[in-house]
Length: 311
Image (cartoon, rainbow, N blue to C red; front, side):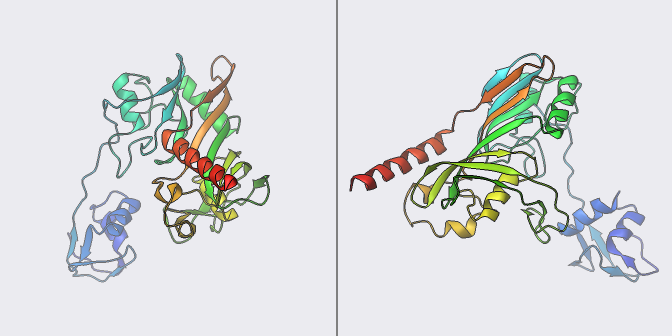
């Protein structure tokens, strides 16, 4: 690494010296601890004055092209233009840092369910579900369908329905949550209604069932912001059960024992999607059954409620 003759930022020096291709790449390496100045990890804006020893341990870059993998998929609907699959909880939609394998895309490629002409990094993906959220996921099979489906989502012509088990019971049986959402000002993995650059977001909800300290809600997000339902419910004071990002504090109020306490993932399920077919225009109504873990929890909650009524 060449010495520096004038004061400059660490990230800019990495780019100027050719160690990093872009400033964003340099910052990523610095933030991850791959860059040391005189043996010490520094921040991207650390000023260099010349003569420092700078060590860069370049992280191994993973290829952007996903690899086919033999992973089971449950197909809810299939024709020549699109697929609807029932994504299980714990499965990532497409390869990304920390999850390069075992994704929906890896499984699609193994089965030849999407055209090879689609973008290699996310072939057919027109929307996403969080890793621990289960339910209906649409996949385009060719470029024309992908363009049409992407446009439909962008223009809010896709009606999505979710089921969520939340902490606490909302006072109103239905309503609309309209807090604008953006990146959290300090925690980059979180979204927030207190963002410095929020965007419009709207979620309608209705209470389906009430339990002791919990409720089953049906939700219709009318916009598609990242973590929208989870952020809106937390802002309302009723976060999704077992949501590690937005509901950890409220979960402490649960009884020390019981089915809700032991539930291991955010209780959120994308249950239905309704849209016009991207080629024929026919209306499709696609439904994913409630997954086993949420069904079992609801069964136990209903049994507990019935027992209390009898006593």
